[in-house]
Length: 196
Image (cartoon, rainbow, N blue to C red; front, top):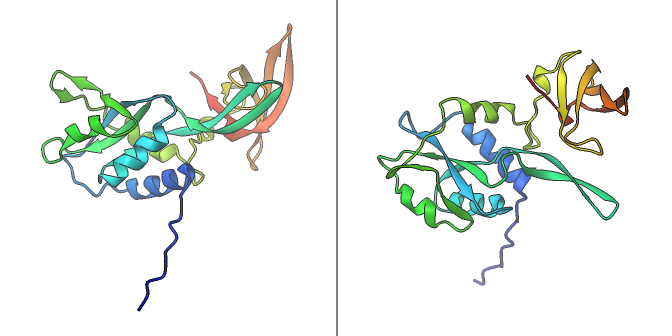
C-alpha cells in the first residue's frame, strides 16, 4: 500500500506564541521549574524558539507591534519586546540545561558563576498574563484618563503623551506635545503602555 506524502504545515511566530502562552498558563513541569533569561542573536528569536521547542524546552518571547520607517514607508509588524532576549522554563536539577547554549539562534543563558541566573519570580508569568490571543503584549488594562503613556507603534512611535479618553471599544485619544502645543491623536489602546 503506497504511502501518501504528508504536507507539513508551517506555523507563524504568532501562532507559536499563542500556543505556548496557552500551554504556559498552567505550568506542567512542577514546582522546581524556574524561568531563565537567554541571550539570542539579533532577530533570531523565532529560530531559537523553534529549535528549543524541538529539544523539549518551553520558551517564551514577549512580543509587541513595532513600527519601522524606511525610505518613506512605514511598516508595523510583531517584534520582540526585549530584542535579543527570551525566557526559558528549566528545572536545572533535572534537565540538561547546558544544551540550551548550543541551540541554534541562542548565544547563551544569563549565568551567575557556573549556574543559570533565574529571573525574579512572577515576572514572566506577568508577561504571559498580559499576552493577548494574537500573541502580542496588551498593556491597556492599566490605562486611565490623565495617565502618561508611551506610544508603541504607528507614526508617533516612542513618543510620550497624556491619555485624554478611552472608549469601551478600545479606541484611545492621546494628547501628544508637539511644537508648544498638544495635538490629539486617535489610536488603538493596544498601541499604548502606561508609564509611571
